[in-house]
Length: 121
Image 1 (cartoon, helix red, strand yellow):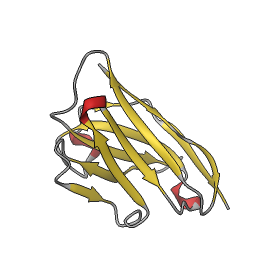
Image 2: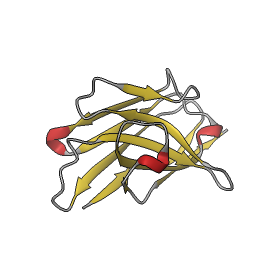
Image 3: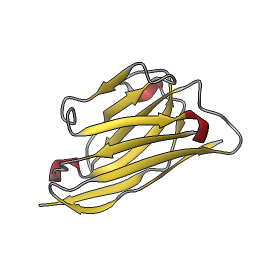
Image 4: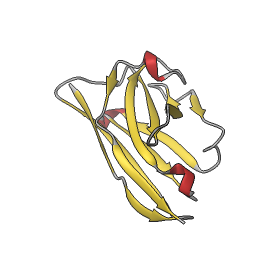
């Protein structure tokens, strides 16, 4: 079972990207909370957003609140991160993960390989 992110790229400040994270390998992640985290070079892995399997609880980091939206489609085993009004400080490798709903990346059991997001000023 694995998680595969896509949708990263290079965008100018103020632009938008939508990241996707698809589960493959026969494991359904519909019972897991899904989280997005990011890590810039030389920095700690930071929480971005998380959503429960039902979608009834959603957390955002303060730095992305109002700009990013997390959502999921359990039928497609996919979670999304819509990122609007991107800023240069959003530049990082973005990872999706499956586990209990939490802002703590150490509690998540399954991880994708990451997708690079670069925002130019």
